[in-house]
Every structure is written in structure tokens, then in C-alpha cells.
Image (cartoon, rainbow, N blue to C red; front, side, top):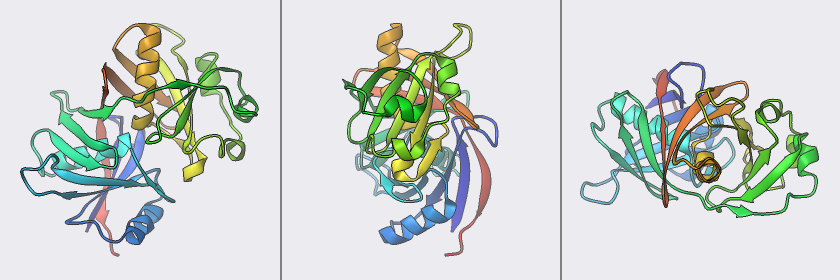
Length: 269
């Protein structure tokens, strides 16, 4: 069967966030899905199969890290929508049935894809003991996210603090069910983006996720409230980077980005 590696949230190869994508006729046993995701060894591998016409969704979609299944993944959804469009499996909006409900994806005139995800609620919480020490940075504020995201959103002092992070991943591992979203406002108003972030998910086998769509369902309402605008652009990443355009629409967050297929091959398993 065909397997593709797609760089998401970028229009350049070897940047953004890579995801594996397999289009299937049905979902095999979970052990097989986990084994393939471990073999691909990217932050997420997406598995999708078509659904009967006339339902609330067009494709079923699941995401696996090298160690576990996750409830929501933005970059692998973007990668899947990109593959469906590139292979002619869809020529219009596509709806995915997922553990987080029905998620939409629509191709834009500039070649980007806009996804429709649920907006994450944010709850102010006290910083866990040792958080600042584990991050190696001053913590300004901490917010919890819903279970389908499972992160702590942590605001740091400034953009430089986010970019310079070298966290103690072992110490971060038990502080949330998935990980830490570290964020700060853009240093310059003319930078071309409004906020920066980096995401560390040691609890699910991912040291650092380069460009995380699901995290932006929390970053969008956080920074929209702070900056007073519903349309923003986020810049994320350490070694690999990418951009996510966000549009807050009440209970939904629209996430827009480009994608590039970098590997198209066969899976012999």
C-alpha cells in the first residue's frame, strides 16, 4: 500500500511538521496501526478510510504517535487533506470523523488548506511545582486545556525565552497528560506573526513537536483575547519551523497552512 510523508504547515520541503499518511479501505487491528506508526517514527501518522456517502463525514481518521493513539492532531489532518486533494480522492471540502468529532478541511485559492477544529477552553491554574525549573525559564501564566488536547499552555516572558528553551523533558513528563505549550508574544510587530510557541510532549513519546495544529486551538483564543483580534498568525518551532494562520469563530477555530509531500512510497507489511 502507498505511504506518504508530508511536511505540514509549510510550503517548503524539510520544514514544518512531517506526518505519515496512509489511505486504507478500512482500519486494521490497532496493534498493526501502532506498529506502523512506530516504524514511521514521526510525531504522528494518520490513517484514513472512506465512509459511505450521505453520512455526516466523508472519511474516518485516526492518529498515532510512535507510542499511542491521540484524540486530536492538526498537522496530520492537514497532511491527510493534502494527500486526498493531490491524489484526486476529493475535489472539494472534506469532513473527517475523528475522536474529537467531525473536523472539516477546505482547500483555498492560494493552495493552502483551512481546517475547522473545536476551540479549546482555557482554565487558569497554578504552575505545577518545578515547572519553571524544568523549562529553565520564568513562567508568566499557566492555563489548562481540555482532555482532548491535554496540555498546559505556559506563557513565558518574551519570544527569546521561548526560542532559547532547553527543557528537562523527564521533569516535564508528569506535569500534564500530553505536554507543555510554551508561548510568548512576537518580539516585533512587523515580524509577520503575532505569537510564538514551542510544544514538548514527552508523555506521549515526542520530545518536541515542530508545528502543532491542536495546540493552536488553545493558542488562538489565548492570544486573540490578549491582542484583541480574531485573525492571527502563529510561528512555531525549534529546529524545524512553520506558520499557522488562526481565525477564531466562537466555538470553532480555523487553522490554515500549506503542505508538501516529500516521500511517496510503498509499505510492505
